[in-house]
Length: 446
Image (cartoon, rainbow, N blue to C red; front, side, top):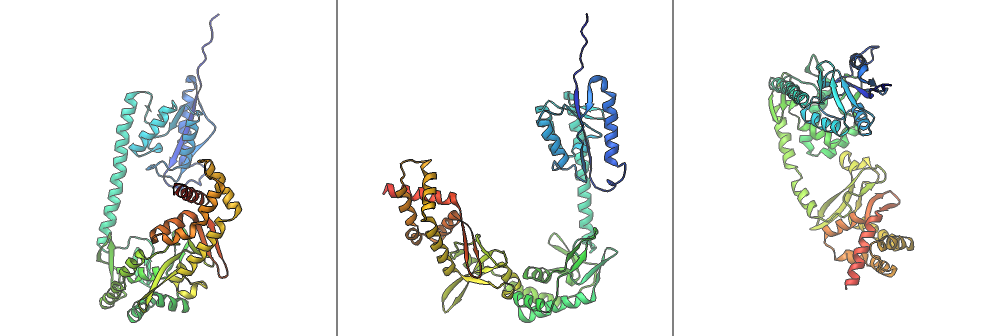
């Protein structure tokens, strides 16, 4: 009796993609059309054992220029898991438009012994000729995409050179009408006030406080999707952007180059030049250089418990003496009245943190924990070695250079939070273990 030959089953995954989400809410959209064509192709290969897997791999609203797509990632996971034998797409550019990304996908397909079929282009990666043809086609697809991107960039640059508004966040003092900037009289008066007052006082901090007291806010606008943006109280960063924006003297800027704009100027050239001169003279180059040379071991780990913002090192000189502080970022941006904590004396807070650190690392629980972990690497270290090593933290601290103090604090402390009535210190357990091991080894060597 002749044995019946069994056709092996080929599990086919259909992948669909659309670059935008426009029209995806329709009863029958582009993704459905792609899927239907692929299902019909698979049905035509039923005699060969082809059958579709039940999972859907649809990426709606995702570009083919990269592989960061949720459905594609699920597909690749299923391929790696051995659940797919063939990937079917309507056109190969649905899978990717990048030749480099296509090469990565082919490697994954070959590793999982998966073939790739495009139903409208009749390509199959099972043959070397098919792979060569696909590479050529993808090269043209990528070239077309890059050419289109260059055309868009060139058109944008040409429009900016002609002074045309090309979209984005409209600046304070202007509204957008028919793709043109039109002066908003109320906001324009505020812009003129900001420039005139800065010329008078020369301080963004003081100006920020005065604007806040007057109830002024930054530009509020509505996106094309209906979301409201801006409309927040001014801070120093917002003011500096306004004071440095050449749109207020009637210019359009593209990649650091400015061109005459189609819109009217709000600020005179004379006021603009005065403001730029003051900004240049207030540039904190000297302060930054001094701050970089000044010890600030809590930099990067100190936070304000009231605002939740980082506290950055600052300093001042009086009578030839240097006074160091840590200042809340909220107070720096919006004035000292914005934060009840404001600043803390650097030497005082550093001494408190070191004292708490000294107390915490000498508790029996911490010593036992560090000893247990350290013994895993070196069973010759005793609990007494660990105790003596941790007790020597304070004298070691006094011998360190500022940079070494900073590295030591960063090793031991994860976060320091300053509240109005208390200080919270969170330690790094792995840092304590490293320090104890190093100090223990130094004492034994001595």
